[in-house]
Length: 386
Image (tube, rainbow, N blue to C red):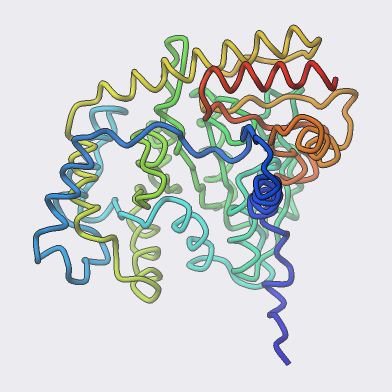
């Protein structure tokens, strides 16, 4: 009687839900689980942001429907942050759209531009909503491999011409989830050339731009000449300010792309809770020292984990951005089986690469979102089973 739509049936299982089920079962059994799986920061949101939320939530004006396109003050704060951080000047009225977290914007955007039979060029491995959003829009997904031999960058020249002619969207994500790889200006220039030549919209996911180490400062796709003619960039307060549960982010870039997403969203939601928007302004315009603190914390955790895994005989590249470590499973073994082994034998949760696509098989992702003490304990547990 209740038959799912073909679009829903075509969706792959959402990996993180499957992992969460396994974690809950293990905890119900009373086991001490060390969760290195889902990338959810363990540090609290800075207190001045919380205080602004509390204050704003007591104001009756914030209890009404929010403007779908976001408060003008929030859009202006985003524009100011982008100019300060990337030297990119954005028009707050036409080039910025606040979102209920960047995830929903990324997932909804294909609905505005993809029709049945169109192609979306999706990197693989990838953040799952790139693929699921395209499938829900009725489009075909063409996986673009991110291979270790090419520094986990897509080789755009290998995409067949017949696919390029049908493609409408290209997703890029650097610093990258899950591989933690990074991209330089030359790569973005190649993307602009490719997209302009093939009349393809570029979707840049920049959620991890502020989580970087060793003096590295990631750039923005929109810094490149011509990028704003063919692209849109998504950003979020989630990782930068430890606000994952607050659900606030934005899209910025080409005005027609922003307008289309705004039109779509006006039929789907009624905007971000106004008190959260005011807290977001405080995050963007307030003290920024928290960012340096969390980067230092993640760097210390990274170094401890890399040292521990190296002592086990694993070859591990040290990431210079994101809070993930992406590494091969021993002997390129099945990533799901290996992840289950770690949970069953060591009570350690990691994310199997296959959940990010078939080109991610043979890898696992480890998140640096637990304390150094727990990371050290996880390494000790791995020593006993590997």
